[in-house]
Length: 157
Image 1 (cartoon, rainbow, N blue to C red):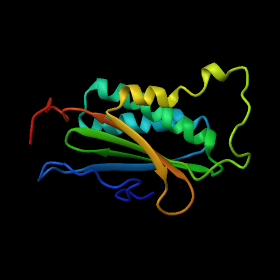
Image 2: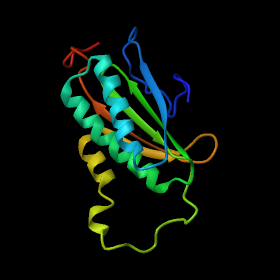
Image 3: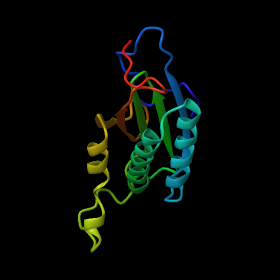
C-alpha cells in the first residue's frame, strides 16, 4: 500500500496548519509478521519523536490487531497504517476477508488465552472500532491512542 492511501477516513479536529503524518505498510499474513509490524511501527514512532510510553502502548495495540488479522484472514497479507495527528495516533489494520473455515463455533482448551486482544486494545485506547473495508474484501480494525504530540505534552492548538 502506498503512503497516503488511507485505510480509514482522516480524523477531523486536527489543528489548522498541523501536518498529518501517515505511514502504511503491509506484512505477510503469518504469525511471524506480528513482530515485524511491531518493529516497523516502533521505528516510525521513534523517527516521529514520540516518547517511549507511546511506543510501548502502540506496540501492544499493533501486536493485538495484527494477530487478530492473521487469525481471521484468508488473504496472504495484512495492511497496516499509522496516522499521527496532533494529539492522537491512529493505528489501523486491514485483513483481506474471513478465513475459508468461517467463524469458529467450538473452542479449544486454550480458550482462556485467546480472545483477550480487543479487551486489551479497549483498555489502552482512547477509542477503537471496526468496519468492513470500503472497497474489496476485508475488515479494518482501528484504535486511537491519545498523546500530547512529540515534545508537546498536551499543548493546545
